Image (cartoon, rainbow, N blue to C red; front, side):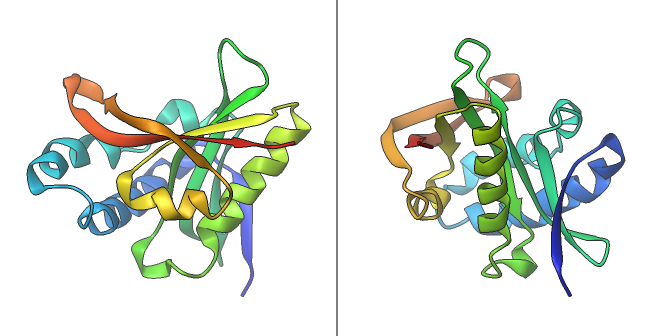
Length: 161
């Protein structure tokens, strides 16, 4: 079967949320202490309606089953800067190139839109994944999630030119 990538709609909220709920607990467990995950997971496993409707958030699916999701958004102040957003592959389908296809699709669409730099706020466990595309670490950062939850991350950057 073939994997296709398409933009999301609000109709995808349950399927995308299910991917996040399966992926994040397992894929983040080796990089974060239990107390950090206990606070962060209830927040980060939720699919964000504004992303699903933005036109630059995508699902990878096979035979109608969502295997992964992720996208990008343009920076509000710098039209040449894009931000990688909420990328995850269902843990039952990792190592099939799904995340790679999603990111490459994001890069292609961002280039068409005139974006020349991409930034991501990577989880600690996803650092090697993003480095495989050429992202470089700018530095560590704490992402403040809903309710003031602090989530240790890495700010990474990549030139698209």
